[in-house]
Image 1 (cartoon, rainbow, N blue to C red):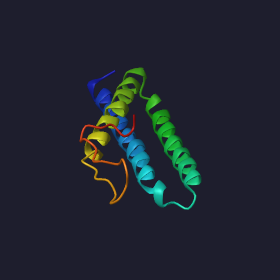
Image 2: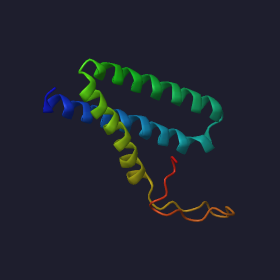
Image 3: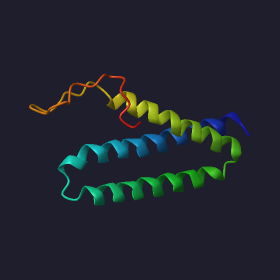
Image 4: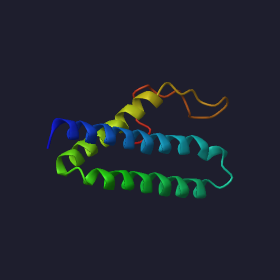
Length: 109
C-alpha cells in the first residue's frame, strides 16, 4: 500500500461524498416545488446510492487501506457540503416560525 493509493482513495471518497451529499441537497431544495415529492426522493436515493456503491466497489480493488481512506473522504465530504451550503437562509415572507438559520446549522442531521 503506497501513499499514492491512499491519496487516490481519499480523493475518490471526497468526490463520491460531494456527489452524494450534493445530490441530496439538490433533492431537498426541489421537494417543495415537486409535483410528486415521494417519487423525487425515491429516485434521488436510488441514483445516489447506486452510483456511490459502484464507485466504492471500484475502490475495493485498490485494497483495504485505500477503501478506508475513501470512507474517511466520504464522511469529510459531508462536512464540506454542509459548510458550503449552510449559509444564512432567510425565511419566506409571511412564513410563521421560520426565522433565519445560523450558518453552522446542520440541515442533514
